[in-house]
Image (cartoon, rainbow, N blue to C red; front, side):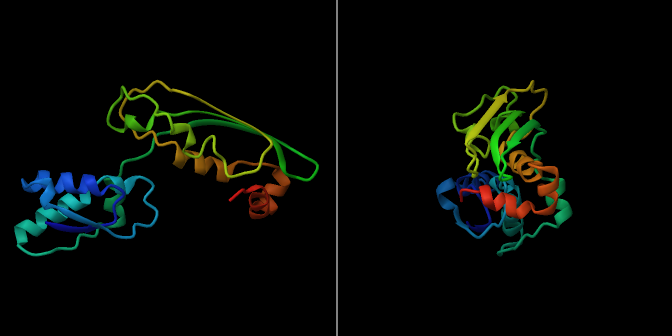
Length: 185
């Protein structure tokens, strides 16, 4: 079986297709195409399983394209994260200190409510900011998990960083200028 898919996890594509078709994983080849902004969604190969089953039933190659509505309906949503952010601004208008606190479930809690934080989880955009800020402190604490939900830290972090108000006047008038002046990359 040959599959072409915009996936972040070709091994999962092999395992999924092998499982739904009842064939060996070694008999599945996955070619990874460009995927755009997947943000974790394209690590789940459910759409590839659908294509494999349809292809087997029809006896020929198929192309499956989900509508935006279907993609969102069957998505794996990120968890809610509580965040507190505070900064001090120097005379030059740039941040001199930055404090950020958050609680969010570990990424593994997508399918396991007993999941624990991985060693690199704080590095998913939380404690490795691409900004040159001399005094930076990032804190995280685990929430109480009551159901399996996606705990990916990067997405809520990027949203918060893009919305965080450094200075009420400067941020509203020149957000791109402020971000580019403190960005390291």
